[in-house]
Image (cartoon, rainbow over all chains, first blue to last red):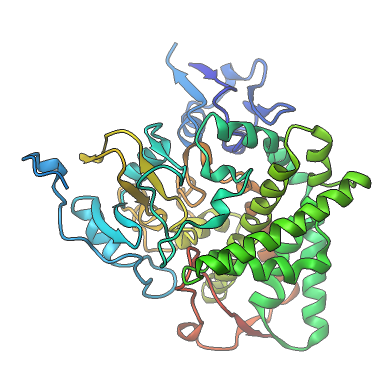
Length: 64
Length: 398
């Protein structure tokens, strides 16, 4: 599973952090980041939820 | 209306009445279900002109994320909620970024995002807890009955946003009164203008004071960041002040009623999300206009046509939430659009979640004998506003 985030689209709603706190974080500007090394261990259901709940479409998920 | 024989441009039915009265707590107008099960989009008429009402969850999300649909009230055809059909003057306030489209909107939103991250909001828990405790102390000290709206549901979010912004709490009555004018549909343009100007003058003076003596608050930090003009700063502060208390107050009040009538859910940490979906207090806040022709839910919307995505209709769509009229905190309610969707999704949504959670937990833990002082059917509901809620919530305790 490939997770791509686009901080340029992020509006800082934080829904990804609430959904998958081990995978997503907000940087000093409040914009989305993926925590290093976390993508491999992430629950695919949580990742899909985070992408669907993101209001600005800043998270994309693709199969490997 | 065009006379060309394109079936999709024809209104699916006669214009329907709007806004519709909610028949009681908590349910959206029953007409919403009829529209959702039919064409999904129906034509209605506001004083400002015809609009499309959008009722399905999927369609509402599509409206709120489509770049061809604008949130800018200066665009031709933009619907106005007020009965007079005049432009709500607060939309013209510099820094009123909910009424801007990208990329202009992003400049303001990005300045504020660091103040509302999940981490930042969690750090506010002790502040919220202290405010909640103080309000309960005051209620308990005053006797064995109260209007919970006046003594708790409204002051809690009002004091929280004041504390965050750095607005002195002694001025709470002043800005609550002005906010009430701005969210009331029946307010005249003159009343709106007066309230807007009074709030801007007040915040302008406050910013001047903070320029000389900065504090540990959001307004002082925005001044220090230096990215907004003073006028923009006043507008942003006014927007946060207004958005930050009346909405949350309605949610807290209605949630208390829900828990008093369904006490098995007291203390459950899943109630907040379901309450947000169930009541959808901000049903009518996300007005839009198409700036290009766009198809939503199979319906062609022409450039210049007004659009009202109905938040409560989307949140009670059975294709998104099974048995939507049931209050069921065990469901997964997070895909609700109670905070909107798209780039304008509520900036303060996680602050609202914290406030609701702490308010319910503390209230029922500290006053376990809390009961309604009037039958639930007699609670006065707000019908005259863009926000749904309770005018009063009489309660007693032992």
